[in-house]
Length: 346
Image 1: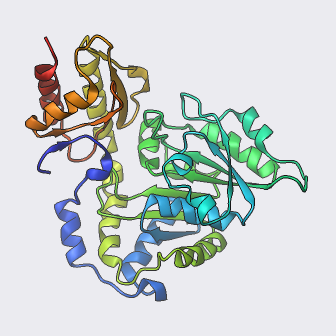
Image 2: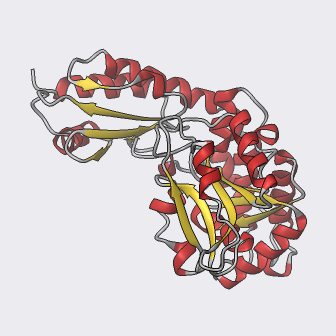
């Protein structure tokens, strides 16, 4: 990359290997189902998750929207966190386009929803109320420092869903980060889920795309929903070729990103101008804050760092979010720490 960009892992450029694979990709018409590279990506993704089938979609937002609309009808209700990406950052799509009612539950610092509150949120059989159809979890939880949600919790939510005849969907945009941090197989981690989305274009470096996996019957329905939303694509094998490298190669190196995040977090914690909870830095995302007496605001510091060819995301006057990824190496971490130290008021 041409700068040290820590705003998100969505800023990653495709690797040279990906660019070469895209140039040489075998293609067909995916709406007709005959793009061999897309079909291979979907099949390999499904196998990796222990599910029957997969569907390539343009983005994680589309993947979650397709999943909710495939699980729910108009007027149905989904239980999800009040800080969930689907609820906060996806433009209200499930309500706008699907007529699906969101029932929010407070997200805990560890990214989970209290099990008792999930149970309480399930509607009784009452004609005055919407029908509960779906529970939605996020793993890792992007608004809670990228914390990974463990298998035993997901299994417990799955048991609640089964008990009440509900489906469980996981927004797994960074599910491979979760599996890496928890040192477990992604199929085992998501075994209780009826459907999972994961993003190819964040820390996995593909230029675009996400995958939705689930049962064969569910994916058949999801494919129709994708078409309704305008997501039917043609010679999309040029993107799927990069997605195959993302799935088969980039998912196996995420521990490096986690180590770099930890290295950066510890360096920031050593500076008296910052507050950071090191226990929350478990994957590639961290939040930290300037102390009130730091003598500089977050937007001011972010602006000063541009002169060092460093991009940070300020969130308000005191807060930052940093996300490490493939293009951030240990030497970049050291450069960032040195530049921040230089620009802080003495």
